[in-house]
Length: 141
Image 1 (cartoon, helix red, strand yellow):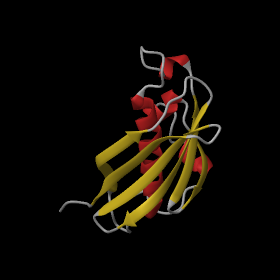
Image 2: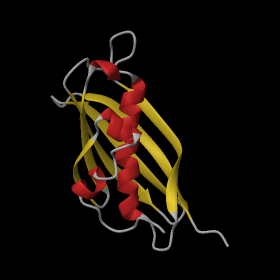
Image 3: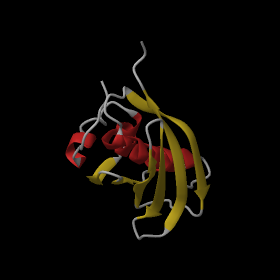
Image 4: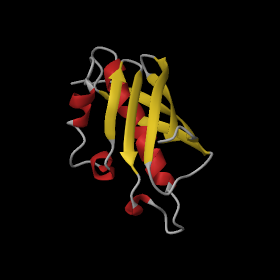
């Protein structure tokens, strides 16, 4: 069964324990259909061996924000979704503080959704631009 319909930030946060986003410490801070905000605190274990923020941390934050927001825009009768493509442009980094992202819907169709996310530092400096395409899944048979 599809997870369609509006979900509050608290409902989405309840999905995270025991998953990678939960392990990273991601928190949904705001959600409305077509837009989701999330954040996480930078910790030493989220850095790369070179001492800078690991790219996978940034991608996980942005992809999770887009994925959670996709749930609210799934067409009636769909069975779910999966990410089929993603791209990130990294513009900066941090070693401490907070990461924030705002995910916004660019396209919500019957077979695909396209999402954009901007990842920024807690001070508002843009660190990465992210785009992903979600494939809407339909029941078989």
